[in-house]
Image 1 (tube, rainbow, N blue to C red):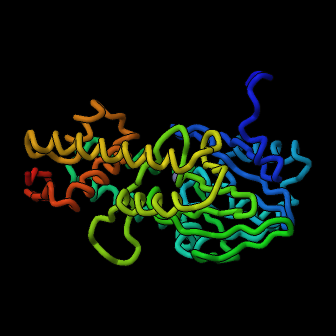
Image 2: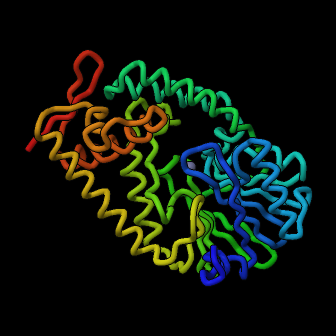
Image 3: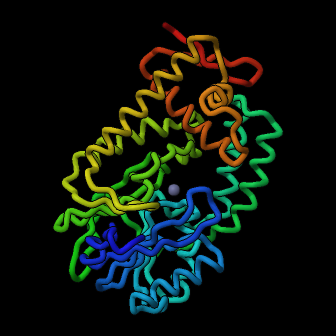
Amino acid sequence: MTDAEPDPYAPAAQAGVHRLAIPTPFAVGRVNVYLIDDDPLTLVDAGPNSGTSFDELQRGLESLGHALEDIEMVILTHHHIDHLGLVGLVASRSGAEVAALDVAVPFAEGFTEEAQADDDFGVAVMLRYGVPEDVVSALQSVSRAFRAWGADAQVTRVLHDGDRIQLRDRALDVFHRPGHSPTDTVFLDADRRMLIAADHLLGHISSNPLLTRPRDGSTGRPRALMTYLESMRATREMEVDLVLPGHGDPVTGHRELIDERFRMHRRRAEKLHGLIAERPRTAYELAQALWGNIAVTQAYLTLSEVLGHTDILLDEGRVSETEDGGVVRFEAME
Ligand SMILES: [Zn+2]
């Protein structure tokens, strides 16, 4: 950044919300952790569980005049390991309360078992939607290795949709916004028209509607993108001027951004419809047709994208699924 460019996070900092960009080993790059300089002294997310990230978090807090031990509350935005990984360690070092939405509690408290069950679900989904076995097993190894960046965190304050977290100088209203993950939670400071949105709304990239194992015992495929679009419609109605995301720079003009996302998802659904109309294809073949040869690490993300958009087409009655030998193909109805 040069002197000529104002710090996009300056307005948040003036309101006592300080962004710390913590490194991650993932393609997404750094993750935004927020220190809310209030009473209780509050951290929103903590970064992935690694020595490097922990060091940077400590240094970042020190540069703001605080020690890690001073943290009194950690709020979790969702259960993904780049956000959750260090929460347990920060809480044990500081004695901080850990606040998380009810649906995030099992993920946070039983990270290892939950991650394994999610992987098993992912394997079954990938095979069913045409991902080759060698790609599936390679991705499994990657996923197991990445699990080292996650860790359990005991939740001491269970939040519910519609709750209010009262701090000395501000109130944060809690809203469940599933889609990117089933646990996505946003925190609204209505007085300052500021929304801590984490990965629910990112400025520089569209959030992936990651296909996640249903936790209600249902066996059907969850419709992550449909859920996400509904969540974005709810956020679009909110009166906010500044959105603080989980990665990258803050977002101003959230309605324009959300409308742009709606248009992008519509375009992508139409593109997929065109490909399916040419001939029946698996979701994996559709992903390849859209993005060419996909890196192994991206196989599940791109599959989630494709299935999200075929859900829109299925919902509109424009495609159907046919299963043959355990593998699903999409076929055009019009
Ligand atoms: Zn995430």
